Amino acid sequence: MPESAPSLVALRAGVALGSCLVLLSGCAVGYAETDQAGSVAQVQMVDDDGLNGVVLPEPYSTPGTLLETTDGAAYSLARDARDPLTLVFFGYTHCPDICQLVMADIASALTRLSPEERSQVGMDFVTTDPARDDAGTLRDYLGRFDPAFTGLRGPLPQIVAAGTALGVPVARGKKLPSGGYEVDHGTQVIGLRPDGTAPVIWTQTTSPSQMAEDISLILADGVPHLDESAQATP
Image 1 (cartoon, rainbow, N blue to C red):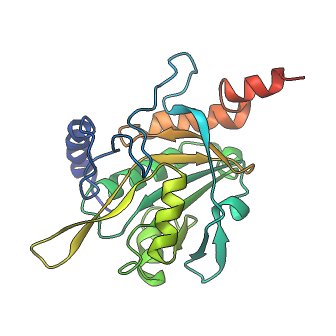
Image 2: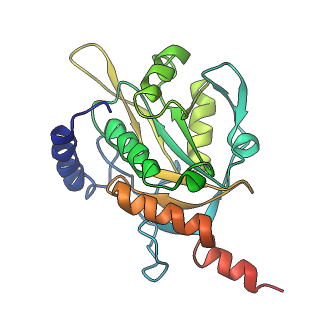
């Protein structure tokens, strides 16, 4: 993992405070207030659905935007994310804090699943900083969490389009004293199904055990309320 256990604990404490804010700021805040780019701040939780994450009132529709894997293969979230559940996260390797924490939590959550459950879950990391995240850099970064994770990159306008469709704002952030720059983006983890819908999200304060619990429930019984409604329809 990219951070030691003590530093992750300290970082999570800071995140818990930051998540109360509603403005994006260099990968240091979880989600933005509703705007044209899309967001999750105004999404209302359904308290009786049994999930720690959020079941969206209306699932996102996965875009057919064409991206590229670190192996150079063409990849579309709508076409190629075929596992029963695919976790999608937009971030970048130079992110100083939140991306590392969220990715470590995803990796930890997946280790808590049974082997059968784990085989049904994909994980796609979409870089929001393709100028610096070349294929090698992205592959090395993901290898620190789980070599099975898929890394996706492409022209920035295509990444922004994909993020917008899934409620994740992506924008160039402030310059840093070092000469680099931050990338502002939403930090929610998106639950994508093979039918092209994304009905569930987890915010950055969801713990690995909570996410694992949700994944197990979704794999076994479907998305609460959403799948129950579909089964009840004649």
